[in-house]
Image 1 (cartoon, rainbow, N blue to C red):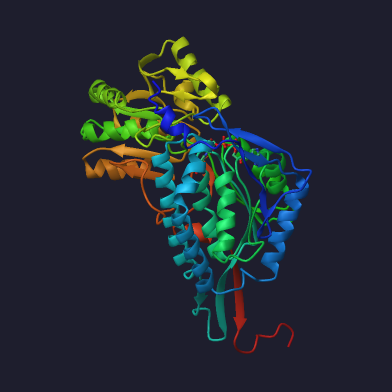
Image 2 (image 1 turned 90 degrees about the horizontal axis):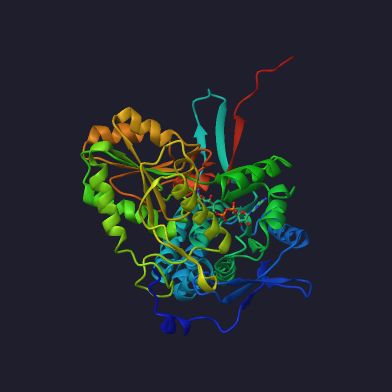
Length: 502
Ligand code: NAD
């Protein structure tokens, strides 16, 4: 299964783990007490980076730096134009450093290098888009309240924001949140996933180079149960923006109750690909193969459920399986591979567990199923189960791996009921040539993002987020900057008040 060009790739591996200290108040920050934990590349099984294990004390330091930077107005009170200039320079530096950032991203996450390059460049585009929004943030006026009253609605930055990110798209997901928080005028403490912290730390240093004042962005690395939890609880943090699994999101919500901080949550998904009988089956098959293989299925919007009209199920599954035969899985530093490694042993075992349970339960495995973990390198080939009971674990739980569960429907209502019959509501793809059916499905499906005759695509202009247990709030788009603001209304008396007593 592994298609590798080992010798060529080995040249590009670091000789020893590269140490990455934390980043606080505009500087790299390390003390003699800091322990470092080693990250091994899941595609190569060798040590590549060493990340500091931050403590509550480190987090307090970072929050104080962010608090000072917010309260003295060095970022929160400057003009939108000045903020935009820094964000645009950041975008330029991201592009200029694309190769290094992509290399670290691939080594730590196991994703193919070509994909990493694409994600870094696309992230730069998000920074450019958010730079524009820094000059657009504005409130509202009400001049209809009578001759003596003017109403104002102001949008102000929410304050110090904690951002917690997952390991599947470390740089891209951060870029869907951080530049919007900065455009709004907030200051930030980021807690990246412990497996993939390096590109976040590199970005923090690039932001200083781009002219961001010290203390506006701080990065504390370490365990989620320590640093992430402390950030969510912190009394001096005004908002927590969390991206990760639904169970941890629930814990973050509870912790945020300590000071009733504002909460943004981007959580898991079990996203349907709904295929009607009149769909372009070739196009749908290609997108379904992509939707389940992309990032080895470790993608919140992965199209992990195929819900297809019974009359075309056999033909479609055959086409999907034929395409998956051409998918090259293996060496992440080989730019010709489509799918890289699974991020770590625990995730690998979790995915393998779902596959084995499916086989044990007698579900029809029509493609893939093989997993290899020699030498601490973890690969799983795209896998397709057919005839999946929509109430079963395979159809209900987020596997977060390249495993497709196929179920059939006979009527429109049944298709929608199946699509909506999970606790999640993150994304959905709809395949049909009938405009009315497409629009009706789009209206009925419970998902924050809908793709019609396409999948996993889009730019920063449209908002993203989840219905139901997939999250709270929206990122990107115009709403992405509003998310990091508070509304304040002002009633302004222009003439004499009507006296209470006289
Ligand atoms: P995770 O929930 O295990 O961890 C996410 C982050 O939370 C990490 O940085 C982790 O260190 C931190 N964390 C762990 N415990 C914490 C706690 N008690 N308090 C605060 N922070 C804590 O998720 P993961 O395994 O890194 O990522 C996979 C999950 O993320 C999947 O469920 C996926 O669907 C979801 N995800 C969602 C989106 C989205 O936009 N909706 C995007 C990417 C990933």
